Image (cartoon, rainbow, N blue to C red; front, side, top):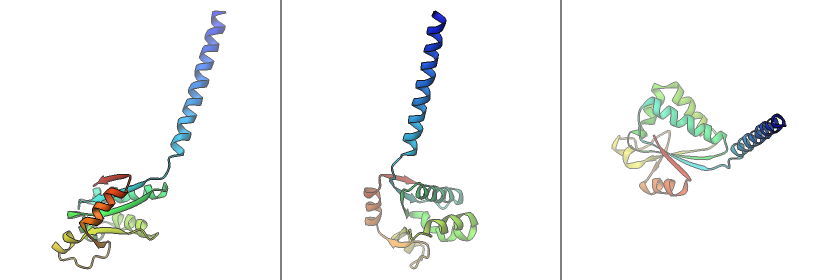
Length: 139
């Protein structure tokens, strides 16, 4: 009798754990899209590459992604020349009409008045990116 109760208890435990695990997986699969703001202020190749990889992955998950280049981040155009991987990730990000904003003051201080990879933007644009996105990450 005790053995039957023990076996029944173990069976119920496995069943409930299995159902619980399935519900967690289903919840993870049902994550609703969100909006992501990425502020890239680095000119480190690996850091920028990972930021762009995250941006592209997030877009594939259905998220909206906005990128703002700040400080050394506006040197992205130079990094494209140095890294094929960054160029590929950037092309993938821009392919569907997405755009990248770049700090106008930072660009002008580097004598880049006509950037090719981003549009001249302002502190107001950065502020709006921060206010309008659910998640903001800096790289």
